[in-house]
Image 1 (tube, rainbow, N blue to C red):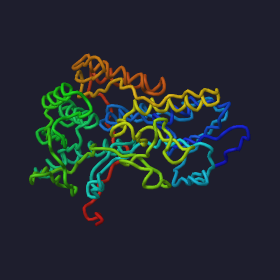
Image 2: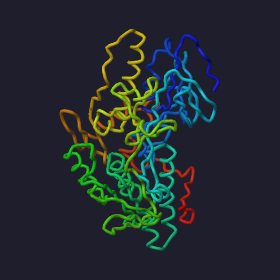
Image 3: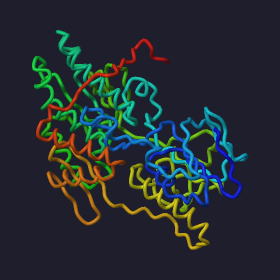
Image 4: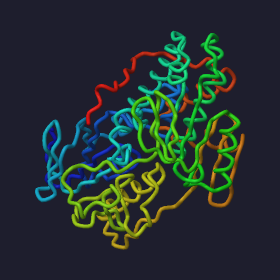
Length: 429
């Protein structure tokens, strides 16, 4: 990896440049530690806005920012673009596609991956949306479907390629459903005047009795109402059993014919090989109240991949807990060299949650009050705008949002990289 050894500095290796890992990398004292940050991408992704990339509301470069640009103070800091395959906890080494590396301290912030709950068919045929690449695949598919629908006179085929099934009624599913519904309302008549929008149907499937499980009942009902007004077909208490690329199979013999299933029904920790079964709980790495792994005194886990056993069901797998854990761990490492021994355990401060359902429509839950409608939408935009990394990204996103507010159909919808569907005959049993 070509990382020099500095005798008087402990080496801290951070795997993952998501919300949690980035906070640690930025705030660790470089006069006390040599910091090595490893990620499979050379950019940080602002994942809450992936759905806007998927629906052509934003370009990918407005929600991604160069890691090297974020961390400009390069003293005793090294970034390497690599995949970590294995962690040897005894030898204190990580093994990657570009070589192996010794660590004094290891911080795992690998985030999460899509959870298909063991269903191989759904994993094979459905579309996830956890990365910029996946969001671009979805964008291409949506636009290609509109083009294909113009070419066929077969009504059944037209309906299938214009029917979108979103599985998962959390913030991602709700926001994506709202964005697709607005595409149907504003884009289809403008870009495709010869395409009858009655064939485009958006289904949102939720396994529980309400949308937005992590938010208040009031916000859930408002989101339900807003989506229904936009024409989204909502299925509650609906558990998806299988999908063969053409038909979604649900309980009670219910079916939906669709070529497009977008899987937003859950995530699980992205765990690197090298840990034992007892180190894992709920597909996440077990840590104590100080974010240290239970068995390994020099290995820490933060963000989506970490599970604090004392916190029921672990912390929400969202940006805020990850950011807070990253800040907390960096402070602890820095306090260690300031001889501060009264380190307190990590306590998550819930500062609120929110979801947008479309223009002028959003819901916000804060500790002491709740918002809905236009004001909530303004708050949602402001918070996401200030959270974006980089001044350029903020300006681009804001400019896009302003233009789209007054001229929604003016956003650019280009099929730069065609997406090719997986064929049924390629399915592996």
